Length: 419
Ligand SMILES: [Zn+2]
Image (cartoon, rainbow, N blue to C red):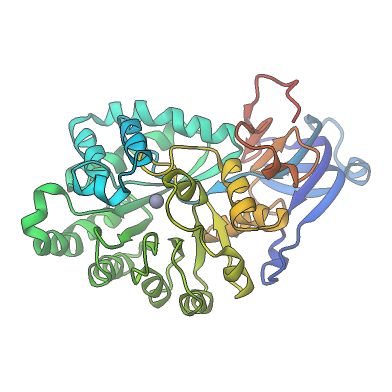
């Protein structure tokens, strides 16, 4: 691929890998900036006046028209492959039923599973693709996506195959995760055999067929116990899958301890997290992925204690948790607003949380998450004056343009839109 010179950036803002160990997250800001891309990576970042001196003549140029340039956002926790709609359930909850009550009555995840198991791979792909398109329009260049609505193995396999098909049709980078979510209805009498099959057959198969690069488990009352989750994740580790945990969403489930013990790449949710658990996670280098839009949408739990996590030296990433039951949004910028208001995170911390620390949660921070020499040229452009505005203007914020690997893969059709 040829070089590309991106000029006329009013402000470029990025975390730097060198500042990674700092608890007060700093952001490097370059006014009137430019970026030189060579092949799919960043060759130079700097102020336009000096960079213009050194670029070869006739280098193709992209005019950013005074936009703000940030690293492409990383949404490190989503469940976007499913079919159907659970809007009824959203309103039942608002009328007073709890998430766990709806689940116990056969709604919730089991309802999605019935629909997934009845659908073809092509139908799943067709219904899921627009969610990836909306995510891209929100500036997301790397998205982690989980299975988890099949529950039965055939259904999970279908979802992972659908993800592989989607990967071929979208410009974003995709990280696929096998999620063992809850016990399928049909296996209620057969719990032990289900767990044994997972460990001895299914998990090794997911790894050997390269259906996913990571394993996740919902470690919670009503889902899987600490011991069951531990067995799944250990089997995953033995098969060279990366490990992550849905932990401490509705209580102190043991998920956080488990993530620390297994040195998981991340522990996600963490609404119920005390200082002892935070200490364990910090010491083990586990990234805390908070999902504030799901707290907002469920309207019940406390928000995760992000300030205490940051003060204890934990890296905190923010993701959408995009899913039909508890977070029906693709908007990562909206999650930033939630985290600013309810978790009291600063604009710098928020930027880290959806770029370099989110990349760290996927163990891909050597390639993505910042605009630095040698990194992949994944850039999001915004019609915003500064990083403070990224969480300030909420609800309908869209990126103005997006590059993945130096290729322009999205441009807002309404170029005149200014926030
Ligand atoms: Zn989730």
